Length: 276
Image 1 (tube, helix red, strand yellow):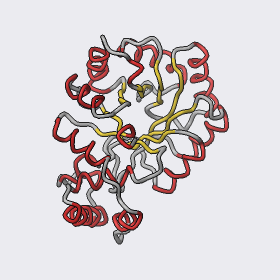
Image 2 (cartoon, rainbow, N blue to C red):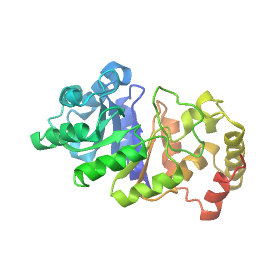
Image 3 (cartoon, rainbow, N blue to C red):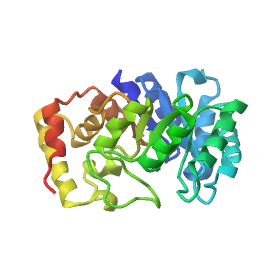
């Protein structure tokens, strides 16, 4: 079910009513991070989780954001995420950043220690290079390494919106399927670029052409450019999930409508073929 490939992003503090609406419409995953609004976003999710079956939702919790980006701090960051969310064990803990100066083995040992302790069920990484991810996969195998989260959208990333953010190409995204992991595309709508915002991180002639194509196709399909852009992400292989953050019930409903919009291979290729 394509709706289950949407991930509710909580960079902005989420409203419990929106989270209820998300689950009622078929959503089953929530993205949180220790640094989002200094932990307040996770606390809001914790309040929402009280009194409901947490098994209904997969929590992707990120930690080890700079300056706390070190293997020695993995345990503390896992404990902080568990405390903020009010859970005994995290479904998936993702390293929010990498320190490429450190050996992958140091990260692997720290993460596997948490799996062995039962504080996390699985782990992943965000804003890592594909090369470093593959090295981590070789180190730990596929049993506990569950998720990879870099930016991906119809618009190509021009400049990182936050320090040390990384994007992945469509080819890299498809290749991740061979590793048996879920891929979470953050900012899958380029932070409003397809809604008409000229966001510096995505504003380029090539991306403007892609936005125009999304508008043209939206006119043909009687939908919105934003829906077309999200449908493009969901047109990727089934292991690809799309993170969508919103504080608007209307925008959330639009996201679920987009999940029902299936683009043909010809339409998907045309959208991405804007000249450079």
